[in-house]
Image (cartoon, rainbow, N blue to C red):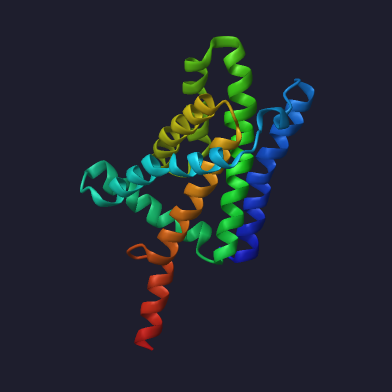
Length: 199
């Protein structure tokens, strides 16, 4: 997929989720800025909170389990298609937009309102499943997203601050994409380098 088209789709989808969240929130008395509170300690805690996410990411790629092998194959097929033409700062922009838009909608608007009806734990489970379905690029990818959605929802509850899952989501996406695109085995950039070496 060409760079301009990929960026356009990212802006349309991820940015659109944020716009939907803010718009619905306006009419349902949910104002996102009331759930965001910056402090330096929270930033570093949220970055450190991505460690379990990266451990899971590592295990998926390294453990020779049939289920993980299928998921890796799916990731290796879809990631280059979506992000293969993007540059370094494009990946940062895409990660930030995903972290902001998706967290405003799922851990923000949805988790807030559903919790008001059925409580924290059922809301956490429902929103996590919805988050996974929103990533139904492949079945395996959706399962991973559901697990990560559950974890990000727990961060939102623990810190009582929507900024925490936004930071964690953005940081994780960016590092994971950079690793896969530039340093991962069979990464698109590695393949490009190999082709150039042969010429």
